[in-house]
Length: 123
Image (tube, rainbow, N blue to C red; front, side):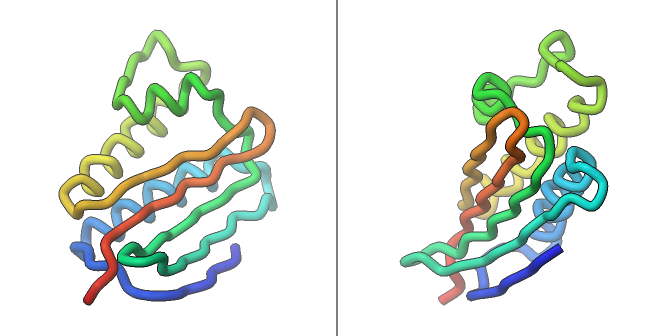
């Protein structure tokens, strides 16, 4: 696991920990054994960005749309363990809303996923 750090977000520390742990947990769970997971941070204008990238199995565009619209349906789950993905990410989205943050997801089946957490920068 690689970690690069730049800047501090303005966020509740406990909520930040839950957000990062949920995304990292999913990255580990859906990655191949010994697959790389990269964590990077950057400052862009008034935002701190935390990017977590894995080399897991990836997600379809439909799955990403479902996550972004906060739809959780046991009938639409391709894999049993994805139920945890949907609820964990839904928790992240709720906590990000409370901290005025955003989540961008980039993924393709077989190519892994990138989760980009944007939080207001501390002043």
